[in-house]
Length: 154
Image (cartoon, rainbow, N blue to C red; front, top):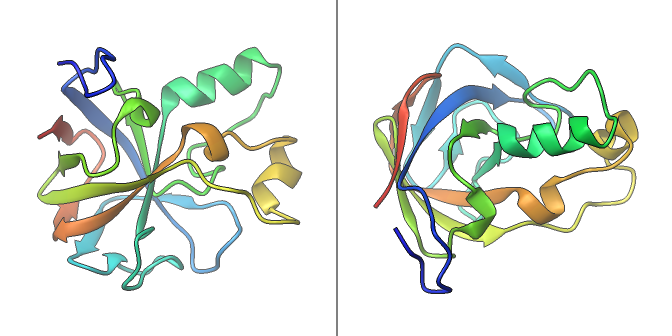
């Protein structure tokens, strides 16, 4: 599949982990499954709300880049991502792209972000890859997402 910029984009990926934290700015811990609520986010996560950054996603491909830079001991959720993915180059997706993730449909609302001062993630791992390679979505259709679920670019 080719996006509007002419980039070749895989159409399918998979969910590796679902991660959640009760406070903002800290690493998230993997959970067995996530309940995603329409127009709200991941139930029990600190980032829920009626805003454009309800869910954060980061690919294991980005974790590999950090490991190649010499950062060891990374765990899924260390970059505060709600969904750790595999098989999609997330930051090549365009804002407005819709994704079917498990039972949900989510819409890409932002690529990357500016890290805030004193970010626990940057303190733990030395630098954060979310500003360039993480993406954010809002939940269009709620449902359950669990590790192993398919991600489809719609």
